[in-house]
Image 1: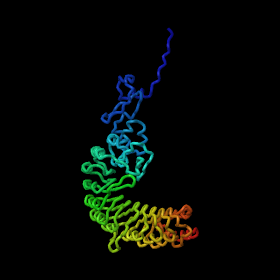
Image 2 (image 1 turned 60 degrees about the vertical axis):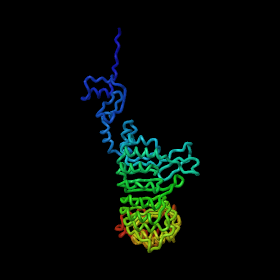
Image 3 (image 1 turned 180 degrees about the vertical axis):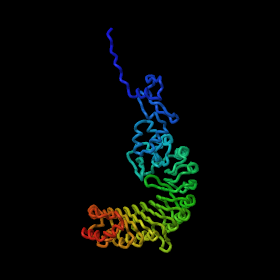
Image 4 (image 1 turned 90 degrees about the horizontal axis):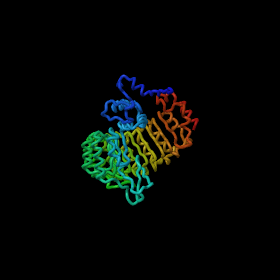
Length: 481
């Protein structure tokens, strides 16, 4: 018989590694291993990788892999989770915030993301319509599909039983949660149970809120940030929040630092109760309010208020009281008005009278802000920063009349104010620009002043720099104008 030459199959690197590794058993035979690449459970200390399909990650326990992944950035963890199912499961340990879009996925959160500290349940609180609809309603940070007959009725939400069961899952699985966004459709027992077992809740957003839903608000012992949304047009509506709810809130949440009232009703009594009871309140935001005339006088009770913001308000105060009964908030330093209608000069004057010590003013996309109404801001002598955006009725003359009366102004931003022109800048306004630490000047698409100031160092080194360069910058701006 002729001799047959036997070709020796080349060894794989994995076989060589296992045979040469000192920890491998002497009678190790890779052929008897099953071709199964099961991922180890957290209880297995150090599983052995398969030589047929080697994966060195299986040599480490879950605890070791979590320590390896913890110093990496969130984007790196997300990319590594695509490598295997095990890394996908472990990557959930680094997720801190979850926005739930489908209520049926809520029972899966404890196993998928065991270390969540922030949960938003509002988008999932509105189930999709039975008949698929291409109509999508977007509000704030979430979007929901709406039925075709949304014109005659509001968007349907979950029933109370399903919501109670969902809150019970969160209560049992995440006792150390810090931030939660919910709808006020759960029962009082479910809310009370959540507040008693989740003592670490510091920020709470309650949508579709009513006076009765605030009965157990005092059970959240460490609550510091609260956002109450009474109604959203086209999404949900209800009785809303009146002075009764504001009074309950004031006596129940005395440690509040930030408070936002969205679509709430009320009057002087409710606002003054919050100011007298919530001693630590520093930031108050009023959005789309429906408060009665004269409510603004209650702001004087907020003795430690530092920031006051108005968003989307059609009117600040319909009929404010006289100046001698308004009072003042001397601690308020920040006043922001965004997407508000500022057509009532008396209302704006009353607001600036209360906040006579403000240092930071923002007017963004406010309708009706013309030269006459903006002139009342000249009474605020301590303004350090002014930001104007989308104020198309304001002119260069009206802006200059107020800016020249502010001796402490150091920061100015004018964006998308089409009636403010470069060609109308006077020498006094040019001299003021030379004293500023920060200047953002883009009133319209034709403005060339900001581009021409590049390279001069304006806004880069502060008043000490401009003290020696003031005359040169002043002449440069006058030449450009």
